[in-house]
Image (cartoon, rainbow, N blue to C red):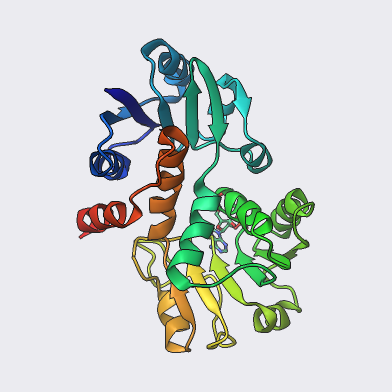
Length: 277
Ligand code: ATR
């Protein structure tokens, strides 16, 4: 039996064991994936146990995604630029850190909406932890322009400059007078802020009067499954995309890195959806 796990604090709400064990079963792979409640002071020992016990792979979640980096042997380029790791691959004791959150999100967006991101203009709302991987993945997907609008302008400017080598990127404040024009010109608008997340379901990251049927509008939030922001965008004719796919596809990439086998994403989605009902 090949061993896998997830390190988090808290971790008991994680859907990953359910999703990943089902994926292994579906592919006929003899493996077990277990959730480990790892406190910050135990993280170093937990990482060393990956080598000691011969785990093939581990996912890392809140609050360890940044701190874990110092204990690994190698960090993939994307994870280095993002500044966080969510997936560890163990090659005979050598631990490499990857970040599959952003690329998982972008794969979900493309597969679920049918949009091809190459050459598209993206408006991202928010510049927090979750937005870093998403911004990097958009840049690598060949979009023509990324505008990052954030309440705190400095964080938007910083994030934009960290990915500007891969795609033209600009950071602005949410109060920027150009924002209306940027909305009108955008192909994709994505909320990466926490506005609208349960229990604050009536909050909006953006007043949506300029959203129309030329837009794909996406939200990283998956609780609720369809946020108020998405509901209003859909009523205005936009194609909408929720955050659940990010959860599925970040795991799918990990599965593929560890096993070399295409992830059974339909089954993975089905078990996660069932568990949320
Ligand atoms: P996460 O890891 O979930 O991304 P985070 O790093 O705390 O969380 O980032 C939260 C994001 O939501 C930030 O972009 C934050 O804006 P600031 O950088 O200005 O703090 C945004 N955000 C949170 N609450 C907000 C609010 N009430 N109004 C506007 N933006 C908000």
